[in-house]
Amino acid sequence: DTGVSQNPRHKITKRGQNVTFRCDPISEHNRLYWYRQTLGQGPEFLTYFQNEAQLEKSRLLSDRFSAERPKGSFSTLEIQRTEQGDSAMYLCASSFKNTEAFFGQGTRLTVV
Amino acid sequence: AQSVTQPDIHITVSEGASLELRCNYSYGATPYLFWYVQSPGQGLQLLLKYFSGDTLVQGIKGFEAEFKRSQSSFNLRKPSVHWSDAAEYFCAVGPLGREYGNKLVFGAGTILRVKS
Image (cartoon, rainbow over all chains, first blue to last red; front, side, top):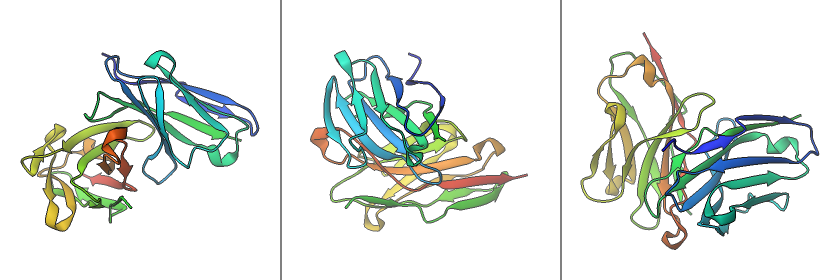
């Protein structure tokens, strides 16, 4: 068990480009969460999967954001037509049922 | 609405001194409560959690926290701070809808500085 893994760790992109992040949860965890953290703030919930089903999406998740978790394993978060306001740390977490969530190291996105 | 307040944005303590970080929450039912720590540019590491039972919970790295329902608080304490404890600390409450898993609401964090 190597914990929650996120790739890439850092991403710099030009405004208007699309980006995709990957999260590999702890292998036996059936729940997977995406959070966004901006400077000076705590993480904010974006979306949540139980196995392959996306069960909830925050209003923070605009139409430019899409998340998938094919086969209930790894997950991807795609941001289309990036904007400077999308610059943030994107954190993935996983848990087994209602136990505590374990977080990955995050992907730091900078939109220039 | 569910919310978490961490009143102190920054706290500075001397190495070896005791530490208390404050956390107050607003939640409509019995909450799950967590403290996470984050080093610069890193993800979050779970320090401790409260689900039920004994209101004084022990965590890793010598931290403990006490759940006080009457005060809606879950303050984090450590009797003697080490320089390596310098980091940002987040209090969180969940779940928000048990049938949808334990998504969390976080406070804005408290940055701990340790002076030698």
